[in-house]
Image 1 (cartoon, helix red, strand yellow):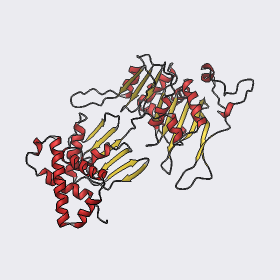
Image 2: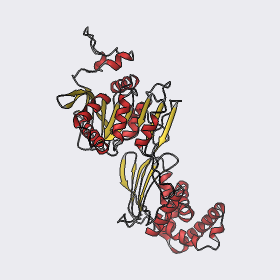
Image 3: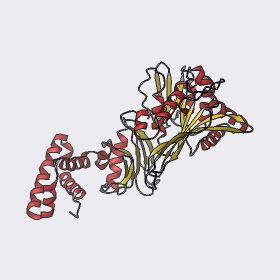
Image 4: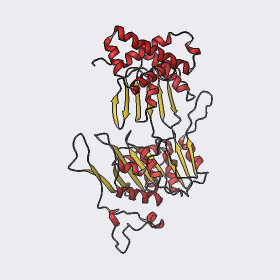
Length: 436
């Protein structure tokens, strides 16, 4: 059928139901009964007056009819289309750019939804109700709000006059199941050999930065890495919005920043939390993302006995991550000489794992690089694994894998101290096992 009746019927039935007397006094059960009754009346009317519409209703499956009822219910007393979106576990990203432009990422693919809100007024009402459920307020005088759903999903809302296209909502969804290395292997993000190498890095207490662009899967990868941390250790996690799902560590403390508001002027930053964590006797500190002056505190923590600490940062290459760290440290300590900053970075960070979202939208680990040290005014890097495309790759589909480079691992002390030396090359020239 050329015409899609779904949203038309939602709007018409919503109007009919909202005209019902004492609707605000109805219970949820009474509203459900009212929707059933009005829907049946609508079908009966269509039978006698609009054959195409009646044919549409006759072709609806049981599931499709329930979806229609649910959408009408949400429009009347809930979150409308937004409610439908946030209950779909396959949707990982939501981008609402005004009432008539809704984009979602579902199963790794970005698409525009056919459905839309009735008008900007309905979108405003629904978003304000949605935000108030998270104990936040958004309006023209307070137009930008960050919040978090109970499942850890991040919510960012921008209202006019700041948002020129109308109310804008961005939601980053997270799976209820923690990401594991096994999942990364299934998705082809890494190889079995690389998984084994990463496990040895984490267990031997190497400090690791995971870098990549927006949407490259940094937090997901960090979560998978943290599953390698021995359960006997004490771990402190520090995040802007709590996203990490670390399940195998009994002795864990999770901390989240707090923004200042009109009632409580105090703001608790990542820098504050890193300083506080040092007084909690952590074995490892995990910072969800370093993006500012707290970088210096993180580096100092890595340099003062908290081996095995993990963090992420925005950068498009390992070299870019080093430059970003330099810039971030300078924002909080402009008087520090660049040489001192580079020495601090080189002695704190052991490995940089670079992730990328490729042209076919797949997320892959594309490089694992050892930070060798500081020499002749620069930080030396030693690529250990690099992603290479193979003959099966096309413009639309990337095919390839991480390959071990010919470079030897330069710093072996942490491996040896941890008793992990079976794959290294010792002074007597024992060969690398599996080129790891």
